Amino acid sequence: SHCRDVLSTGFDLPDGCADAVFLDLPAPWNVVDDAYRCLNDRGNFCSFSPCIEQIQRTCDRLREVGFEDIRVIECLLRTLEVDKR
Image (cartoon, rainbow, N blue to C red):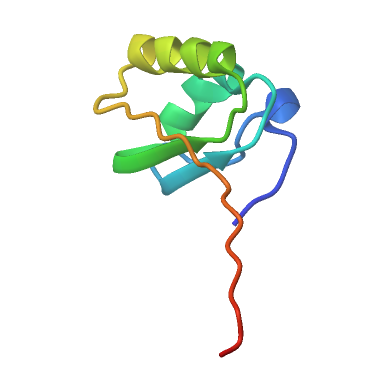
């Protein structure tokens, strides 16, 4: 695994070597091209974005680069209370 500032330096990986890319960035659309280059044919791209505008820009760029089967999933937090019985 690699942790680095991909916005500044990109992914330091060979073409097609990654099974998945997970991002938590304010502007993930800026690294979509390099992520696409690093992913293998069955690779997955995942980006965590709190705003719909970020999601829209990222999805637009994913389509432009050639990603297929793009899905957006909303994760909601729900607190559960568990009582001892």
